[in-house]
Every structure is written in structure tokens, then in C-alpha cells.
Length: 349
Image 1 (cartoon, rainbow, N blue to C red):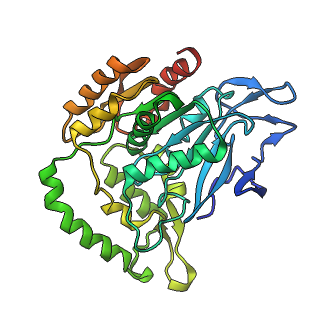
Image 2: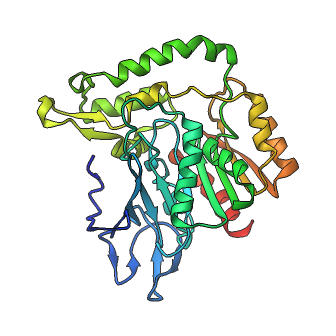
């Protein structure tokens, strides 16, 4: 899918598998904008982070590429940010301009999401385990030390798991409306396994001509309906921008397809029990900011969220837990409500 950000004209250069592109509004080291906080550019002039203060990034992986948006300086280690299930890195487009511009943020599209490569045919998505490995792959590629991670929903579950798996290597953890991997009933998982496997095989063999095609307005309505009030018309466009692609000309269909891999719909095998989540929570040692939406997401086992927070408080260096009015996508729909907490945590904690 082509980048639909009409305000940004990017010239791209690739080095060692990482693609760098320069925002059109970057002039003499200064990024000019309308919102965000001030910092100093390389030439000493003030800079302001805005909606265009990012570069498209391409990270080579064995099955293709992982795409992302790098907000801020490419000369400093960034926060690594991960989005939710079937979303993409556009989920942070309204929050990043409100974050300290001197702290870069790399927001990635997880495999099969957004502009990132889909897995080859025959491979299943085991989201939690795959995601931990992907974070590790990126950290090792760049040689980062003591990372700060930020995640929403599935992305928050992945950052939680990484912080537990490499407790000495994570400095700060910021999560929105998630405490750890979602816990599902083991009876429910047993009942749906056969269905999930058949659907996976159906999606894998679905002809390209059978993939649904929509107009932009139809796609907008579909996403709004599917998210059932979690996003609104003002925010949904940030997900659609990277979440759709123009239908290929050779299938003679006008409009757009969803760019995400259909197999993601049945990628929930390998879920966790509550005891597993608690065991990982006990291993986390870093500073934690957890922002829960109110009403946020309705979980099948809501008590697990509270239990994880209490376990973190017993073992982590610092735990700040905030309940903020908002939907499950509160960081996207009402970013100003969470930005103050995030910035204070980053700059003062």
C-alpha cells in the first residue's frame, strides 16, 4: 500500500536493510510544525514534533520486511512501540506528536499487519511467541541496551512478555488498556481449536478474486462497526491509512482491500492461562506505567488485570497505575488524556 500521507514527500535511501526517508518539512535540520513540545535540532534551532515528524523505516527479516514509523532523531535509541491485534502502527499517530520530541519512538507494523510482510503460506501466527521473538530480533539488530517499550492491547501483551523474558534489559514499560496476555477459558480454547484450524486453511487457499473489495467510505464504516465504539470517525483514518491497499488491477475490481493477513483472524492459538501470566509478571523488574481505559476493553477474566498489577507492584522497581476515561483505543481517540502521564513517566520516573 502506498503511504497516503499527502503532507509528506519522501525520498528513500536504503542502507544495511534499513530504509530512511526524509519528511518534506525537514529543512536545515529543523522540523517545523504546529503541535508538540520544543527541543533542539542538530543546528541548535528549536524543533517541534508534529504529524509529519516521522520517517518510514524498513527492517529486513527472513520472511520479508517489517515496516514502521520512526518519530524523531535517528541518532538516539528510540522507544519501541507495538500496536494491537489487526491494527497497525498508525495507532500511535496522534500520541507521538504529544510526546517529548527529544525522545524518538519507533512504531512498527507487526508481521501480517499494516505494511509489513505476511508470513509465507503454511505458517501460522502464534502472536505472543512470535512477537517476543520479533522484539528480540529488532533489539539485537540495532544493538540497543536497556530498552523502553510501549504497547497497546496485543502490543502491550508482547512488551509485557519481553520485559519478563529479559528483565535486566528493559528500563521502562508503558502499556495501554492491557496488563499482560489476555487469558481465555481453557474450555473455550479446546472447543474452538478445530474451527480455527479449518478457517486457517480456508483463508490460506482463498483466491485473490474472492478477497472483499470496498470503497473508502465502506471500509471506514466497516472498521467503525467492527470496533464497536472503541474508535471514532476522527481517529479511524489513522488505522485505515496503513490498513488498506488499492485492489490489484488484474482482478478488475475498483476500491480497496484490507492489507492485513486474513490468517490473523484465527491466530489466537497458544493463549495463556492465568497462572502462566502471573509467573511472567513476577519476573518483571523495570519501571512500569499502566494506563487502563474506563470503560476500556471488556475482558473475559477481568480479575486477571488487577492481579497482574498487584504482582508487578511486589516485584518491579516502580509501578504507576492510572485509570483514565476512555475507550480501549484511548491512546488514539483521546491521546491528550494519556500524554501527560506518559511524558511525566518518561522524563521524571
